[in-house]
Image (cartoon, rainbow, N blue to C red; front, side, top):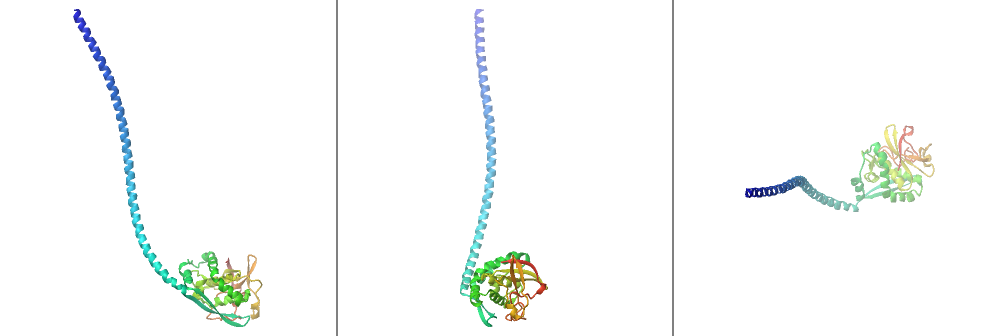
Length: 320
């Protein structure tokens, strides 16, 4: 009986030991399972993050590829344009080489000048280099001769042209007119009066008007004003209305009132007052087919004349 009890106790002890070990093992396995589950969640999170990074990189890669293709197309286009540019440049160089030969060419125009003080006539040889003329004609920008544009544009025409007119203007002033501003201004009018009236849509530079020998009232007024300013004689361009429409003429500021015209039947000097100074009227436009530009008895020959009389209505004065 005692032996049976001992055996039972031993078996119970063994069962208890085994159960305890199984419990501890189960606890250990549970912890490992939890760790594995935790690691699994981390791996899933890392996997999802990597998938997101992959998709982002794939999208960026596709954009880079698209940009690369666009740049390649742009490069091809630029290379094509460069080929066209090189061909065009070669043509322009060829044309420039041909045009450079015009440095040897002079456009000249012998114009008659009547010195009414001495009663003598001489010819003034006005000339301009061929390449310089083509610079103004072909390269410089021309604007339409609309009233709103020319108000802002005329001053530029005169100022850009004064340097190239300075030598001939000062020679005429000092030698031909003997330093007499009134006589010089009247000589300049004779130059303009010998040019053909030809209406133009755009504003011409004085060089173009002189070389081509023609222009409308705006072009002729710009030419006269340039000659005057080049001789350091203050001038303005007057935009006006006459009985026959819009017109442009010149105002000339002189040291004293002009009086040469009184010797040829005039009884009045016409002028305007601008910025506190008197500017005497000068008419650059002339109908050479009807009137002798060298006859001082014709109204319009002198500074201070006004062929339009009371019909002249001043619209705008441009200080050039």
